[in-house]
Image (cartoon, one colour):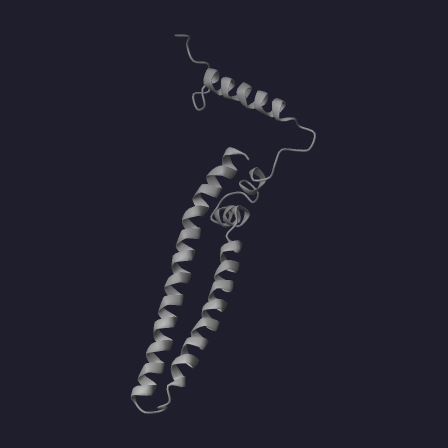
Length: 138
């Protein structure tokens, strides 16, 4: 995994936690609303039999299952490629981030890739990233 991919994946953790909190809050609010409405309907005398408790909890469990499935699908949608695409829509060149999420080109060994990274880091250290010329020795 490249450094860019690990950074995008790290950023994605916050979005996943936020999405999970949103789904949990919506489920808790919906459950409270359903059971509250059923209790008020019983209090107003719309139905007096005790079966309404079982029906209300049965509906609540079915809706909770639906919310869990839809929440899981929404969490699966939050992938590193999705986040890279969203960031690119904000002004980056298309593929500038998404291209770094994929593994190296087939046929390139990890040894060669690490050698090239070391060589480039030495090159930038010697020539300077923004100075345009070599640094004077020590």
